[in-house]
Every structure is written in structure tokens, then in C-alpha cells.
Image (tube, rainbow, N blue to C red; front, side):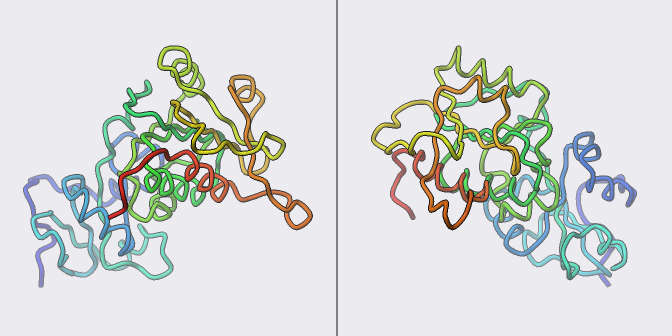
Amino acid sequence: MAPPFRGGCTILKPFSWYADLLTAKGRASSGYFLAEGSRVLDQLTHSYPGCIEEYLCADGGVPQAASSIPYRSFSQTRITSLTQLATAPALIAVVKIPEPSLQSDPPQVSGNRILVLEGIQDPGNVGTLIRSAAAFNFDAVFLDLVCADPFSPKAVAATAGGVLSVMLWRGAAFYDALARLQKTCGFSLMITDVHGDSLLAPSELDLKCMLALGNEGNGISTKLRAMADCTVTIPIQKNNVESLNVAACGAICMYMLQGKLDSPV
């Protein structure tokens, strides 16, 4: 039978420490989140192995990948209590939250594309938008405190492993941070709305841009709308549907705004 623990740490954490990672408060205080699912773990193991603190496995199972990473073994019942999946996974990873995401003040952003999420409460939408931001070469994603936590299990699963591929920051200074980027860094704030102007052509987008998406039901707030430099929309057949899902809207807009990328590999 495999040992219950392997690795460099000498102090074993109680199971309650891992259970706390299911809560936003627990993640913020510890600086770690849980990741599960083969696609997510494969991407994290391949691209960010140094961010994986340890693996959790059930009933003496031994991780096959990244053998240098420590692992803990718990009962199947306890592992099941940590998962959001219908079938308990073979492995759950304990992953470090990048330092910029833990700061109360917004981090410095290098680059010219920022995704801004205001009031998006569905963790699946948040995770899908982060996945698209990583795919379309955005430099950062800023979220207000009403948004779902991007490091929650459901949001992480929806990123398909892209949760560490783009800088994430969620904080109380959300609006001040956007205003500062406009005033001192030359960013233009572009908001999306069903009644906005037509989506700009890529040739017109040689600028530093913040693309803002709003709450699933209410859209962009009055406060953020007042800060906007321009309003865009995606033309759709409104006889068929009233609007697009926010994650679909974001993916289309980010594709248009991605700028000149290197050839796909």
C-alpha cells in the first residue's frame, strides 16, 4: 500500500485545511485552490508543474504524473467530499494562487488587452471567459467582487486548465483600477451592449483596450457605463434570440480584439 504522504513537507495539514479550499475565504487566506479533472490537471502539469503544491488521492492511490510532486492519501469518502464532479476523480491537485491575484491593490499590467468582468455570477461563465482570454492572448482579467471567484472549483474546471495562463485580479478597488488605467496608461474602456455600435474592425483596433462584459441579466452597470470610451455590440438575428450568452459574446469580442498573434502552433 502506498504511504499516506510523500514529499518535502514535515507537517501534515489537517483535512479541514483542504476542505476550506472549497470556500473563497479559505482560498484567500491560504493562497491555494483545488483543481480536478483530467483535462485541467494535464494542462497544469504540463505548463505549470511548479505551481502544484501536492496531489490528493483516494485509498492509497499513487499519482502517475509528475512523480516529484508530493501526494496525500485520504479515504474515498473524504476525497468525494472535495470534488464537484459527478464521479470522484483519481486525483485532486492543490495549486498555488499566483501572487498578483492575492493583492488587494491591482497589479501592474504589461500588454494592451485586458478583459473586465463586472457582476458575472455564474462560475461557469467566469471560467469560460478566462479560458477565452487565455486563448486570444489577453494579458489580464480584472473582476469586481460581485463576480464569481475565478479560483472556485467550478470556475477552474470551466477554464480547462487555463486558469494560470492569464493574470487574474479581483478586488474592491475595481473601478479605481480601471480609471487609473484609462488616465495614466492610455487604455480605452470598451463596453458591450445589445444597443451599442457595430463591432469595430480589427484594423481599427491598434490601441490599448479594456473589454468589459456585464452581469448575465442586467448587463453593464450605470457606473461602468459612465466610464466607457465606446460601446459595441454583436449584430444578431433578434427575431430569433434576444441576446447572446455573456461567455459567447466575450469570446467573439476577444477574437476580434486579439490583435496580431504569432502563427498557431
